Image 1: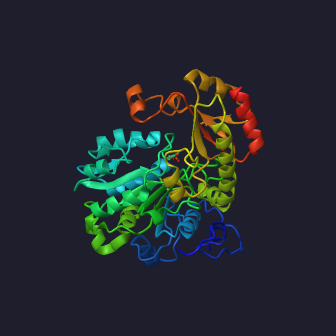
Image 2: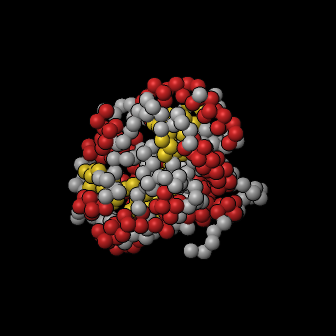
Image 3: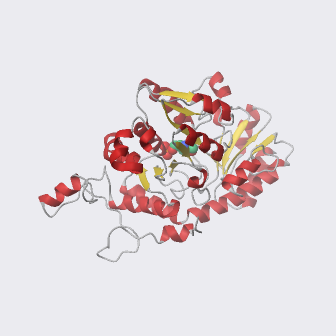
Length: 410
Ligand SMILES: *Cc1c(COP(=O)(O)O)cnc(C)c1O
């Protein structure tokens, strides 16, 4: 693949229109509707013969510019921006699945994704088959002629499990199903999903991309690599649209009907976030690396879970997929739930809050918060321990953060 310069590519993505005032950043088009010169032009736009904007639930110039920037850096064929990470995931599944089909995935998922799969989809007759994605034989067994895709998170949160994408992608290819990956944990400036056989990538742009927790958003990134002839839902459309069948169904039916497109204001903020994405990520990831190394030797810390530590069971595969910096999130285990609560209550810099990849560092006790509404049995199955604290590292200096850790551990 030709060498990419992520930040320059993002900064210099050409706007889709020439601004009458020569504005050098994309204006926010806070307009619901767009006017046409004549009825013929209106007909052409509505019938898809032109790509003019008509109505901002369907497309909008500011959002399109944001999508184009993501396209420039990922080199994907199609990008759609939604109003949240969950909207992106649900739009993908509603495009691929239908009653009677099944989706194969793991129980190690972001809490709402798990709940969406387990409860919401089940109510519409889509079977979700949970398996251990580290067990390739089990994965193969779960896939059958009614499987519409394999869904995974590239590093699970908070278990920090790393699936072998190349092997899973080979399985998907041989079974003729698309590989769908949620890559929220490592931004696409560092992780190249298409190099590992991912067909559809999804990102909660609420996290790194929003540029400091400014707004909620989500992305669907379609690499145009899957042959939809083998998709029960998209087979018909494939005849007309080939590898664009998924995008066609998504843009012409599903996302319009579900009505969760990104707002222009959010797209503006997240476009700015993209401009500094790589710089912020590298700073946060370097600090994360120093912290995990320091904390690994701390007598009060039972375990540090970060996949770029040499002793981590996923070290090799993590290096090969994500390079030196597998995200700015890690967990530690302390002696007990009480020890975790005491630690969290003593923090003075790190904020007690959910969310990931804010500019401010955040701490949360997953078992008593994100997973509190699951039963103990479900938590055990998801590997959620009440001895674990999750950290998302922001842009504060290392010295400031390590002092906060030392104080809270003391
Ligand atoms: C936050 C998150 C989501 C959901 O994103 P929202 O923008 O909050 O809807 C999905 N997947 C992962 C891995 C996340 O961290």
